[in-house]
Length: 386
Image (tube, rainbow, N blue to C red):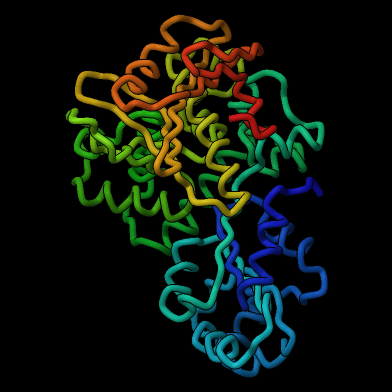
């Protein structure tokens, strides 16, 4: 097993709450992780038809078989047991009694919010981080290859080619999760919508434009984006609230949680193809943002990430909000440090009175400039540099 950085946070939550829900997109290794972290708890998969029938027809009797708790996998398949779980948790003082996992996050969270709110801790498991891959000796030195491969565990621990694994992943997601969450009549249109969205990674989300391209109304597009967000396939990066007396953009930016999925959706199957693709810079930005997200998620920190852009085009890719201060970050896919890298950061610092900023780029040299701006290789964030 490749060691997961979030294991310690998951164990900490189990010592704080009576139950913990492990969420995250499909195939991130949730089942493997919970079995590893809680070897003394019995494991029950509610995907098994016989087990599911028992839990559905006699939930009280089913749960009585686990007086010392259990790992309940695919628990969203049996929403009937959540009310009985609530009763057990209210009567017990034991921490980490039940660990709940499920591949359909939307249905899992819906069931939890209806019955277990305030009684349960959440841990969100993301695909592998660069530090996890580096520790296992699996991190590609080629950024292009890393973006094409993505970070889903089966590509590394089962050595499945992304071009073989990704289409089956998308088909499984659409056929199972989307059908359960929402009654979408034309799944081909939904898949085209995802591909169009992939072409806009790292860009502002213009729902009206996407609506025209896909051929469905705005409310439907908003609903579908909500499904992707709840499933942890995409993340909407909200704009930072500070306007500094400037008119700022208020639409979110769209990022995918995994660049391998983006590349496959765009028909990019090799590092050579990506190298000449006009979207390479946006996909690189997406990858670095995902790493910033994973660091916070694995440590149980709030996702205090935003972006900032005014109407004249000045933009900061990521703003880390550490009230009352903020850290502006520019992400650059070039390997050579250019004067243009600094312009927006210098503008933002002058406007805000902020001191210090960071550039994360694809090169290898580290610099501390006299203007307070640090230039760091993007991979160094795995070592805590930021």
